[in-house]
Amino acid sequence: MAACFLPILLVAPLGFGAEPAAGVAAPAPVPATQPKPPEGWRAMVTDPLDGRFDMSNWLLRNKGFLPVPMIITEPAVGYGGGLGLLFFHANEGQGVDGKPVPPSITAVFGMGTENGTWAGGAAHVGFWRQNTIRTTSALIVPSVNIDFYGGGDLPEIPGGLAYQLQGWMAVQNALFRLSTSNWWAGAQLIYLDAETSLRDPPANPALAELGGDVRNLGAGAILQYDSRNNIFSPTTGWAATLRLREHWGEFHDDFKYTAMDADSKYYFKTGEDWYFGWRVKGNFSGDETPFYALPFISMRGIPMARYQGEQVLSTEIEARYAIDNRWSVLGFGGVGRASSSEEKLSKATDRWAGGAGFRYLIARQLGFQTGVDIARGPEEWAFYIQVGSSWALF
Image 1 (spheres, one colour):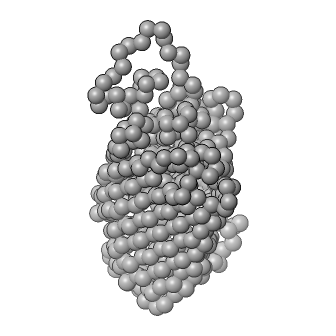
Image 2 (cartoon, helix red, strand yellow):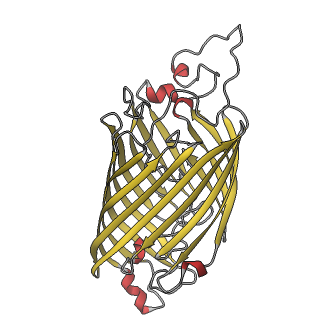
């Protein structure tokens, strides 16, 4: 999950094991003569199996938190920084699937960028009743300065039109396991109360209506299949989520539209050191979707909201090589398309992006990796601090 704009939300639920994470080589045999083990605070951040820096004990047994420094490099909002804190709440016992119940997580964060964008918020991921119920709750207060380049029923805007969206947003998800299977079903509720304003008068007077008060309520159903071996940095398994929502609200006039999000991620390995991931993501929205809510291509190397449309489809692959039981290097690449209601998705322009990066296993017992990616898209370079999975965790 990249440490870029609104980076922390949130962690997808699935069980984790106490064994070394898949994709990590087994630690070397312990020599007969061992050095004196670390004491005090060093013991909390040192793995007794290999003597390296590791935050598993701090997070799981000492009720600690993981500070997540944000070096924001998202081209859409400029350079900036912030800080997030992830608090892990250990859950005892095993779930109905026979796996240990994952820790519940509380997150708080604040960030700002050079173009005046800022945001703050809090979120909680909970696991209940032997991991048969998962809940995600979030409250975000954003003030976003960004450019709109056209999309939906609006024409392409060369150079973009700068606008601000400021207000607050609440999200509530609840998922229920179907028996003891990997299938989940549930509901989602989203509410946005905000105001959009244009930075400068637009050359086209018709675009002046892009400023105004926003009220947007979305409610719908979620269907999910999740067989990943790890929630933070998965290496095997499949995760597929389908969300179907109906939206009602007011932006100048009353509106109503349907939105569907489909996201599939497949993870597999070859040999002892190579690990792969493949993601396919589609977003589809109705004709009355307001401009600020139009889906966009979300991929490393492509600025947020740069390519928007009522239909968006993208795919990305990632290959990672494990150097040892802690360090890995990886490469990735993908392509996306965005189209309006008047243009078929099959005829939309391809937008390519790709790059390389590295990972460090910072919490072995959680299979939790962090690292940095450098990517190039159609227009520019960007780099991202990754915390956990490269892709959405839920």
